[in-house]
Image (cartoon, rainbow, N blue to C red; front, side):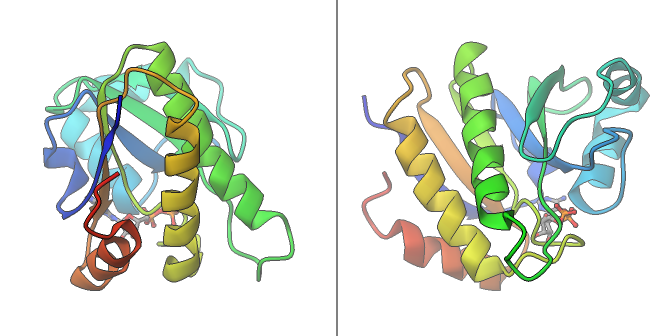
Length: 172
Ligand code: ADP
């Protein structure tokens, strides 16, 4: 089965998919950027569930419900802080995408959207991060079944252009 890969420009909190991915911090207790937007849109029940999870390691992922979001689930993953590239950032970022997809497949999630993990406050250069995102999603989907659609949710036109170039016209 082939999975559709798409880049869209959107506020990820508006997407009515099985799951959206949150670029969380290791406490899982909320933060700024996309994390803050997801908690605001989901409502306070999300924080209550996150408190019970006991945090999350960098490169790992944990699942909660979506509460007031149109998405049924939130997959919380913790990206690496960019320190110049010599501290395993690429492997850790790839792990975020891989672990999120593995968790999604294990839960029967068929459609999900990723934000640009680590490319905001955490400072990961967006071109490099997007390359890792697309390559890791493609490679991981080859090993999993059941996921039908993966969106790369971009918050700016310049990010969208980068992802569109990487995905090309093939869409998979
Ligand atoms: P990190 O701490 O992992 O860098 P940020 O939330 O600061 O996470 O940024 C990650 C990416 O999410 C950035 O590209 C940022 O522009 C984008 N972003 C911020 N808010 C939203 C939103 N509501 N929907 C989609 N993407 C968002």
